[in-house]
Amino acid sequence: MDSIYEKACSLQNENKSFVVATIIKSKGSAPRHNAKMIVTSEKDIFGTIGGGPLEHYVIEESIKAILKKESTMLYYRLDINSKQASLYTDNNKNIEKIEMLCGGDIDIFIEFVPSAKNVYLIGSGHVNASLAHILNFLGYNYFVVATHDSHLNKNKFINANFIESDTFSNAIKGINFSESDIVIIATFNNDEESLRELIKKDLAFLGMIGSRKKVHTIKEKLLSDNTATLSDMKKLHSPLGLDLGGESPEDIAISIMSLIMMTLNNSSGESKSSNNKNNNTIIVRGGGDIATGVVLALKKVGFNIIVLEKKNPTVIRRAVSIANGVYEECFEIEGIKSVLAKTHSEALVLSKEKHTIPILIDEDMTSVLIIKPFALIDATISKKNMGLNINLASVVIALGSGFSAGVDCHYVIETMRGHDFGRIIYSGYALENTGVPAEIMGVSTDRLLKSPCAGIFNIKKDIGSIVQKNDCVASVTDSDGTLHIIKAKIDGVVRGMLKSGIHVESNFKVGDIDPRGNRDYAFSVSEKARSLGMATIFAILEHKNNYSIIPKGD
Image (tube, rainbow, N blue to C red; front, side):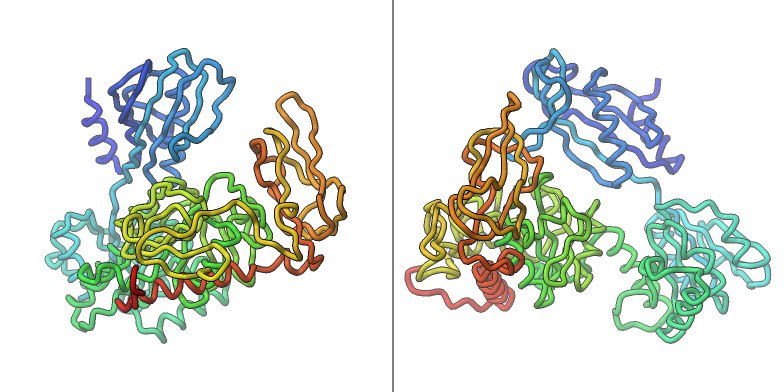
């Protein structure tokens, strides 16, 4: 019988992607404690991790990993008291609860193994011939596509596969491309013909050599006759290559291969000696109203921003919180839309768009290790360190209490209103959060709406509603089905309200009322959030320019 490693090798030889599910850790009673299982996109399995409901869930998650082309960690608790799988959080990990007698905990690593990347060189000229030498050296399986009358010199293409036809169009039509394939168009005068056949295909990389004028002309033709859309054109890399300064076919080939590797590996392409200081990507952990002020400020001065959020963010000021993009498709604030990204690759692409902020569901910050941003900002205002580490990026910044500057992060920014509000702290902690909200027109704690018990929250008066004291503004339904009403304690405008349907604990903040009575305030980013955004920019620029004036005593 073949071993699991022989099966993996066989699938790779068949150019199929798959997942290897490995039990990393187990605690207590579990079906198995040390096992591997292969899962294919067709749900074929090889090996077992114990069978039963656990294996069923792992197979389903493996299929999701194949579709996303990403590896992931799964955490399960095998509990007979659970009627169905349900998520809860323990030590910052999402744990799936499964109805099983075992009663143990089990951690499983889902490793996505992609299919092999085939490279198709459309055309057999000087640049593709030089590119072929690099591909052969790197061990790629590559094909040269040419026409019968192209004077193809096969000696220039070592270990190549050849596809020839009467026209490039017919040759391309005869190829069964996969989504992991790389295609480079570099013909003498048949680039437009080739691109027409390729522009709609789902490929890992599509590039076309040409001057800006030539590329623009071809693009305009394909758009005008509806062969392609603007969305299709975004997939095309053309003009092709990185600006490395060389002009020979060999130089151009190196610049093309560099771009391919940079794109497929989600890399910045910057010099390693720069210590990431030329990287323009910043990850912001948290998408609440304060984090949104920071995100908008950074975006508007030219940084590429990616926001990390929970599956069900409990943001109160939803109308001005990037995190609301988790619930609402293409949610927009001040001309900037937040979009839920499915993969790291998609998030990186979206982050470069001028008016877009991508959100990744990632409580554990694993995205930071994959994307490797220049800066990491914890803007969760969680009042305690939930895994932030000073070594996670070139500059790590935390907002509010619970973090030590110089230990947990490089800088802490003071969020407590008062004399030091917005101050950059270089050593030590920010002031402890009192839990008492700032006064507005002499009103403090009475502005807040809190859950009277644990249960499911529901809105009665949403954000922007004008309410009076004792109006019913929300409710919580407890586990017995009893409805508990939440009433306004003051007159004003509903400035924030948790999303309906979310489970809340007793005394959990679910909303707030603004006694000033101005509806516009409910739909605009606060002065506090904007100020903290500016302070964050100052901290980043200080670090980026290696120019910090540290006050005495810090």
